[in-house]
Length: 295
Ligand code: C5P
Image 1 (cartoon, rainbow, N blue to C red):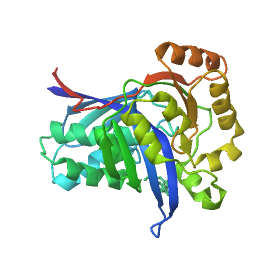
Image 2 (image 1 turned 45 degrees about the vertical axis):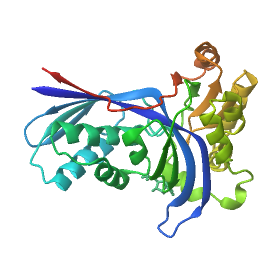
Image 3 (image 1 turned 90 degrees about the horizontal axis):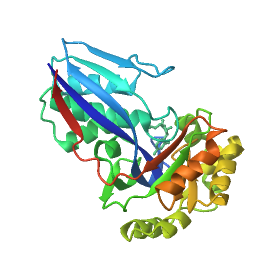
């Protein structure tokens, strides 16, 4: 029997700007997304004709609402394949954290099952299916560094920066992305990100310039809700981070730091108060990170 192992990296948003609300209810975005070395792992084996999912994570629903399950059903129906799979998820990315944990698992499922079931779908076909599952799924299918527009699905992939190190602190609250967008008011925004400046910082691998240009307009919603997000962000900078920001719709805050030793030092300053603290680096390209093993 063959088993496929797929690594599913999380992302942070180095910038997140919003132009306005669209007629379909979604918001028009401009955001620079960056894969990071915090990842979930999926183990998939072809089995029977049913789809089953097992996770090692307390509190994670593994039923038909789970994005992994939905990705598998969507792909199977689209391809008209009479196939089954048993999927085991080893979860490390915190839930509802603003790190695209659910989206990256869905993207990994689509890529892995396309291979395991021998479907031969093209990358644009997988992207189209992915966008039906969530706005971040098309980015997660390829990963690395990208400027995303539209709902988040119009992607321009970029050459990533060198290894940038980050310290992540997940504030212990769960935030619904839909609720954050629902409460977003363009009038409350005083600063939109300068995407060109951030793109330039990435291109030239300039950490300081990147640190100065970290802007996420969704903080205008979440920081008034949870001032702790703003406090952790400020503390990271006081403790020497080059810049700090909330990722996505939160509540995770990341600090951009000079190197791995700094990231470890900054993480240590938060570990006594927070359970979910991570030291990560940027991933320039997740490539075809599927490995097939014979059991
Ligand atoms: O696409 P996804 O399911 O990840 O989005 C979750 C929710 O976030 C959507 O239901 C929508 O309310 C909001 N959203 C938005 N504009 C976007 C992306 C997400 O309003 N560009």
